[in-house]
Length: 470
Image (tube, rainbow, N blue to C red):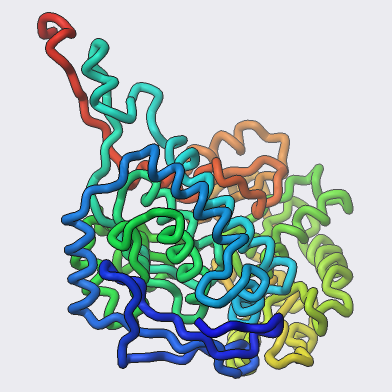
């Protein structure tokens, strides 16, 4: 890559990182900033090269586990400290900031979290291993036998979205477990995946361990068709296409909700809910997009809108903007969608206040707050990539039904039976108890532990264990 200044003004080259090293292709795509300026020239992988890379990965044995852990620890430091492809970490964050739409502090926060995800990948992956399983067959045959945690395959394809830099953290766990990984980065934000894989190679991983293969949407089938397993991120369309496949794990959508019990509707609860709506630019799958209130939901929505407006304040035209910065075309499309919903919902914050032009180009979105009168209204499933929340009434008679199909539900209630019901509802992935939905810890399962998908248990018994049991 070419060197860059703090304003990320240069157009950089993002070549492929293949099983045979760095390669540029004739097929190129320009990556644009939110303000429309060109930032990078991205090489695109042809199907043949994609297939060759994954076949080479299948033929390559993984590095030993202790070497993988050592290389990951070094790669995390290199991600932060090295000049990679001509960019320092600060310069890298400037590029990511200009394409992602996150504000400057969030961009750096999430990018540093990627470094933590690299270093901690072995420990995070191992949290999914059952207590009754060992990591190695050698340990099992030395004792009475045991379950041994083994890979379900050898190669993994990761088809990434551009929501946040931390989308890398999933496939990094697969790498820690010995998978050879083919990464198809987001074409909107291809910088983080490039920096991660370049740092991994500089730290001692081989070219076959992780490859960087940008493609158009038409190139995804070749990637998925060759790899043993795949991680794919997206919305309902992606879930309907791949969700039934046993070899594909789909990340998203979120449809995260907060339930406010009658004893929690006061001012002390508003701050945490506002954080759940607006943190991470309001663009993450863990952001609250629907709030169900036991009590006066209209009053609660007005109070929540006041807190969100205060938090946004005059920040929206600075580098500290609360919502994401998007292109004018994207803003028009999203506001148009909201206007079409206005016949069934009440806009607590006028729509003409939701989109604010930014002096550096583009439009900052949010916050937006709406009320509906029915907890079963389909608008509560609306998930938009900025701080936008729908508030509805709820009673105990409604039960868990309005909360189904949620990645996270924050239950602000003392009703233990309700919490039990939420935990045992199959379509609710995670339950928080009076904790913001955006609370995150790399050691917590997100959509289950990733190891549940990547690994399986096999019994290993040695000859010294004695007679067979019947």
